[in-house]
Amino acid sequence: MFEGRDELTIIQEDIRRALSKPETRWAMLIDLRRCTACKACTVGCIAEQKSPPGVIYRPVYEEETGKFPSVKRRFTPRPCQQCDEPPCVDACPNKGENKATWKAKNGIVMINYEKCIGCGRCVIACPYKARTLDPGYFYTEGTPEVQEYEKTPSWEYGIKWLRQKFHIPIGNARKCHFCYHRLKNGIVPMCVSTCICRANYFGDPEDKESLIYKMLKSNKVMVLAEVKSPAERRLKNEDLRGKPPLFIATQIGYPGTIPVFAEKAKTKPRVFYIMP
Amino acid sequence: MLKNIILFCIAFSLIFAPVVLARIGGGDITYEVKHIGNVTFHHDTHVETMGFTCTECHPFIFETKEKHKTLRMSHRRQAMSCGHCHNGKQAFDLKTNCYVCHLKEVK
Image (cartoon, rainbow over all chains, first blue to last red; front, top):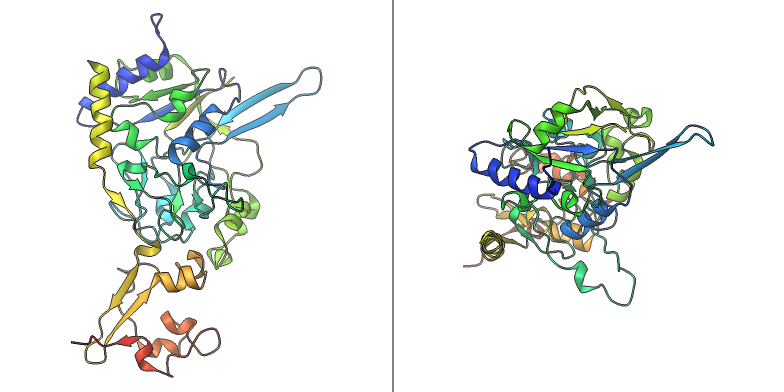
């Protein structure tokens, strides 16, 4: 399948081929057998998107099962699942193509920061905690000087977003977008390229020559189940009123730290997992 | 060759990518009022000076600009729109001075 080549080279070719076609629908496959929880994807993502404290697009869940001496550890990276039926888009009061958020034809759930009102409804609607409100903090805030590297612009969605106080995307909902700005230029997403274990496959699963198609076909894949914690179900929109973004982030999210897998999910995620 | 193409693509996207330096909430929103003077809502005053978070008003008092096209002075009594806070207790009363909000253009 790999013909002695690096996975990244093949994925890069797959992306180029997919881009030459009129319609592409991106998907990701994460091989949990390969993941070592080095978190290079998390770090790479933060460096690429210049995401501030409190906003992590791709965390890695770690869990341990069994009793000593027969213990097992499983690591689950969790990017945005780019659901085909996204609950976050349904919850948005300003949804629609080129409005605040919408499901694009290329399979990615997009956000337009200029139209987002920062109400946080999508953040509680997402059953995977993939969305967070940007609280507008800097990592080096409170030190003698806010470092220059934090003020560098991010290139999300191919637009230059300067990072300054009281300027968007501060206050907006932010999430993983499969590095859309890199993808449209034919470059692999950052998390895929920084993965030292080559645990990620990326491409168009409908393209029969692509690596992701072959891997999806030859392996049994699972998806993350859409689970809402009891506390989250009780949370109403009114409870979010006047609350700062970091408070909202602590109140909601994926229940606990253990990801729940299922064969199918109602949200139809575009991120698939090969179980260890 | 392939390297050159990639470099060119990156350089191209860097040069021609639109730069956005929009204020939170897209800046000022003007509501047209004939004869008396237009009312402009300043996001800057509310977010930067007063230090409100987005969730303070969105989506409970205001949802979006498209869905909240009209403001009425009668909203004050119903504690809607501006009158939700501008009732004399939390913020200055709408009744006191019309020309704090209704600004007339000086020609």
